[in-house]
Structure formats: structure tokens, C-alpha cells
Image (cartoon, rainbow, N blue to C red):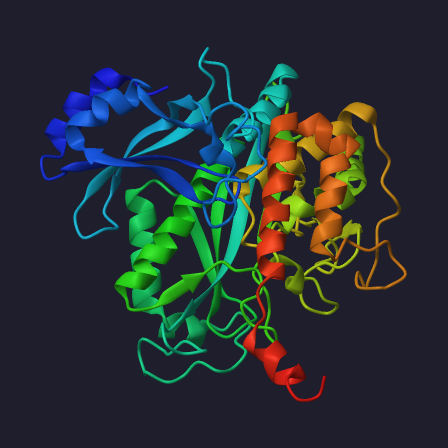
Length: 447
């Protein structure tokens, strides 16, 4: 935990900063917290901020989950808000600079509140550490840049409407150079290791890779910070950024791809064995990922819109399958040098919570390693083959599978599982009560 004694020196070094923002991320990846005068920074770093623990498990709109025991049966009690190890971050995204401190929820006795997504990931990471293992993680996040009042983005250089597919097109990057440059600048200021940018398959769609770090918590923190940066920078350029899984029905969805390898106590990659196939440990990790995938889908696709991304030939996986150098499957083993042998998990949408995604992916891999789970044969060629076991494609069924999943119960605390499932069902009920304009137009006269 950051040393609260450094608060005064930080304030002295940043005399223009008048406010501190302190918050924790909930199960939907939304930041819940407080904005305070900078004089409260020492209090924040000392873990003296308190908020209701139910904030960690609200629905996607920030509403309390009505039948959640954390709210009514227990009186909606406060938890201790513990700062993460990253300490104070200078945030220049607003009209004026501010200090930002990320928090996690803890119980009154100081123990981790395991329905907090970051604490849930920390619990999984600690299990690796107990075995002398370190997980190295990188994420790839896709997003769309659009104009506030248009269906398609317009070039910042020419002003033209960007209405064409632009798969890995250098020209498309050039047309959005000012906003991309600002994204990189703010990432550097906040210590987010942004790497290569590419123009993805959809109009105005981009992917920026975050570099590998030997700390899954840091990788998830970086992904969350990256999302905030992209949205704020887009707004400053009179654009809107979205990490929706499928903002356009006829264009590519946006994913959150996870690359990871595992190091032993001597720093050796346990997935490597001087062959292209990789080690037994790699194979067993894949076995765990495949075994857990059906009951993990609610984490990888947590929203109504998420499931629109999973369609055949849509650059998103549709089957519970894996393979070598195969981008049509859910779990890919990339090629390359032996030292870089790794697993790429390609299921999650960009709308998923990175803490819960990493906790699920790493928890499933650890299960496979511990139990020596053998995966099915790798898929060569078309991963969209309908004869392969299919990923769940219905939101309700995915939540049901998550709630009763045996492997999920190994990874997550019962409070998180129950709270997550209840939050999703509350969201389903609200969506079920909304009739859209297209639905009315279709059935108004013909039904």
C-alpha cells in the first residue's frame, strides 16, 4: 500500500492540483468513488476513505441490486477503501489537473472483500505466487471512434466520412493521427505501456496493444486506465469512443484479447520446451481454459450487446476450440521464438471487466495445470465449423451457467458469484421492459 506520508511531498510537487479523485471499479468496470479537496490525499493514502461495499456489485447503470443481501439484509454497510500499490497518479484528462488514487474494498477487519473485482483477481494471482509462479500478461483492446451526431467517424485530416472497411490500413491511422497522438501522450504521463496501434476491421475501429507486464493486477489497472484515457481524449477532440462489443450490427465487434505466459521461480517460461507445440504445462493450461469456457461466458460477454459479437465469420470466436496460429478459434497459441511461448485468449469483448476476465482466464489455466486437464485435439483451419462445441450465445443461459459452475466456484467468492448473477438478471428485466423503435415499426401494422 502506498505510504501516506508521501502525500505532503506529492502535493508540494504539484502545486496546481486542487482535487483528488479516489475510486474503485465495480463488476461492470465503472469507477465508483469520490472527488475531494487535495488536502484529503493523506487520508486517502492512509486507507481512511469509506464507501458502501455494495458499490462493487451494482448493475450496469449504477443501481443497487434489489435483492442483494449486501444492501438491505445487512444495512448497506461501509467497507474500508484501500489504495492500490500504484499510489498517486497525475490526471491531466480534465479541464484542470487532479490527483487520482485507485482503491479496492476491504472488510472492516482489513481482510479483502472478494466481491471487489480487483480483489478477486488478486486472490487468483496470490495462488500462483504460492506455487512460485509469476504470470506475464498483455492485453489488446479494440474500440471505435465516432462523431457525436453521426453513424460513422469523419477523418480529422480531410473531414471525409470514414465509411469503408480499413483492415490494418495505414491511411486510416494517418486520418486519426491527432487523437492517437494524444492517447499515447496521456498513456505515457500515466505510466500505461501503450504499444502498437492498428486500424482494425470496422470503420473507425482501432486496436492499441498494451505491453506485457509481469503483474496481472498492473495489466488490468493499465487496461482500465487506458479506457478512461481513450474516452476522455476522444471527447477533447469532439469525438466519442466506445468499447461496446458490437456497436454496429453489420461491422466487426470489439474484443479484449489476453496474452499470457507463466514464469517459474528462476524466470523460465514454463510454457516453453523448445518445440512449436509447447510444454505439457501449456497443454494443461489450455485444457483448463476449454473446460471452464461454457461457465465463464458471462464474464467474457457480460451485457446484452456482448452476444451480438459472436457470429460466424465475424472475427470473434464461435466455438469452444483452440489451435496453433489460428485466429478463428477461442484459444490461440501464437508462433514465434520459444522464449515467447504464450497463450492468447480471444473470447472477451472490449466491454468486459479486465479484472474479472483475467481472474477467470488465469483461474481456469491454474485449474488445468493443477489437475493436469487434457484439452481436445487442436483445431486446424476453420474454427467456425458448426460441428465444434459452441460457445453459449444466449445471455440468460450464460448467467445461469456462471452461477452454478463448479470451476467458477473455485475461482470466485460466493458473494461475487451471487451478486454478479443477480445484477445481470436485474439488467435483463429492465431491457425486457423496453420496446425499441425498429420493433414498433416492424409489428405496428402487420402483427
